Length: 305
Image (cartoon, rainbow, N blue to C red):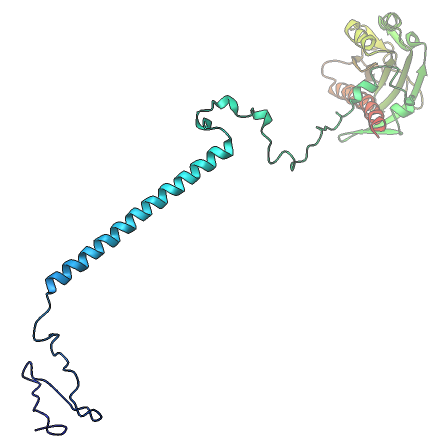
């Protein structure tokens, strides 16, 4: 079988058999092409080619390693120069720590942003007792009706009816037995009294006024069992505790000393079994203390406004 014009037969299954299609223009056969990678019928030296390629690869890797090392050394040198130049001294790494600024000299990032406030504190509350411990501060109005207001008094479930009142600057005239001298020695300036009664029992409360707390305290500590206030009768309250045995108390608060005398309005003697008399006396002594303290609280409150 033939192709072209009278060309030789070409067998693809036989090596080295030339395929020579004719050049239609020149009338000559083109240059012969190799089959199977052969040139002129000889095979290439593959081992030599592989060695040459490996040699080239080793040279390329070596050049890359050397170039990277040179670049690293260059960067390190540049950083070192930058550090030295920034510090201005080749001995920078050997400087002692004393070369650093002190802690107080180092500026704080937050010093300019955190506001500072002067410490403030609320003034302490006024002590009510201060206003009733000295005549200079205790200037509020004082009378039996301001100290013991109203017409009756309720203590718990007990209701006491208010009776007569008294007010004098002659303190000794409102006391009996050993009390007048004690009041005079400590310069008592005023003596207020009020009487309350309930179910055949009456009690007189007496309040002695002094210029200082020390004077009132001295009266309390000096008084004895015979130091009693004179009972005040009238306004429906019969005379009591003038001849019979009665129960009395003595105490003080601030510049005030206060006393009670309680007994039966029918003249009977008070005994240890007379619990109602003891209760009446205690109720009025407690009320006198509260009223004196409230007097101080009112003045302290007014002064703080």
